[in-house]
Length: 277
Image 1: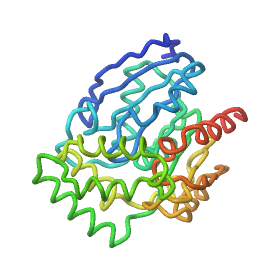
Image 2: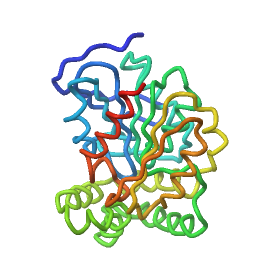
Image 3: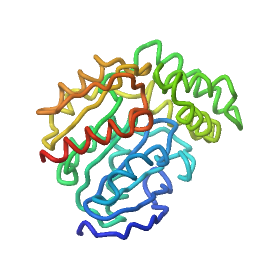
């Protein structure tokens, strides 16, 4: 396999994986940069990165399993299965290695991917993520949330507002209505039953990954949002400290969806990081 040079025209494919049919958008030319988003986001959250990096990279935007245009989930999954899902996507696209850019779920999966598949990982940018187990409070809250979603056909307004509070930083909430509108629309159009399986897999069922991350040998940048109301900066920093040689950066006035809230600043950090590899 080789890293193919693609045209700048956007393209899309639905790729069969162990976690169902996964929708993938591609644009740009050059080495592959793969973007995997947070619960309950999808590939559209990376538009700021596409604008910046598509002239120099082949951008691969994944609607994670059960999200966006991907097939709905009907079971739980592990981060190892997510990493293998990504391998299957890369194989289908004939991509040997990639720079992985992940947020939250994508960042957690990205660490596991880099540890288990070093030959497929050129570099990783892991944002707003953790290597720790969920707290007891989070487990109780998200098990209840998943049980509720499994009984619904639409996401209620109360949960949409709760998601906005969890994902957007205080600064974004008060000054970036376009970001808030994007979060609101994305959460409102999520598939509740499918989302419930993902929530339980990513939150209450996740296990501690600090020891596994010690196996990573590829260059890694870990980014935390100072205003992240889902993962404390200290929690994301502990993840960075578990990865040999990882760089760690905190972005002020940014919450849980750094790439969406502050695309230019995130792009600067990614560009600076990649320029030294």
